[in-house]
Length: 93
Image 1 (cartoon, rainbow, N blue to C red):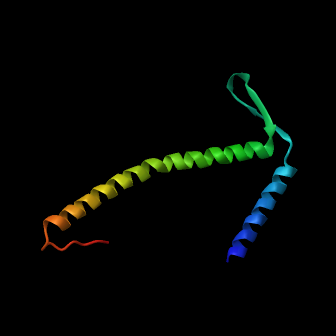
Image 2: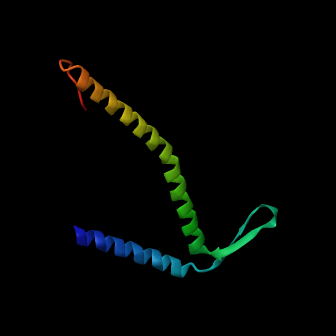
Image 3: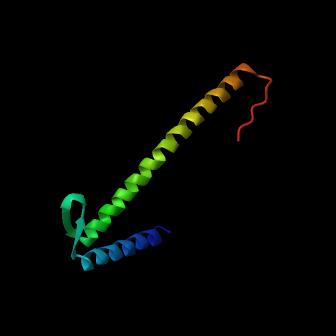
């Protein structure tokens, strides 16, 4: 299984490397107020991919933080029930 995983990673890397080598033409990105930026197509695509990954992670951080707070509160409540009420059944999922 490790060999298959490594082989898959090598194949994907080689495909992406070939893509980057074949797409070295410069592209022009135009902004407002006449600003322009020229860069190789592969670099622009990599930059857009990285920006998308960062945006996705930042979007999920708020949800993760709220779920951690809720989990901490539920664990505290479970612990207080277990300590305070010895005869009360505690259900854990």
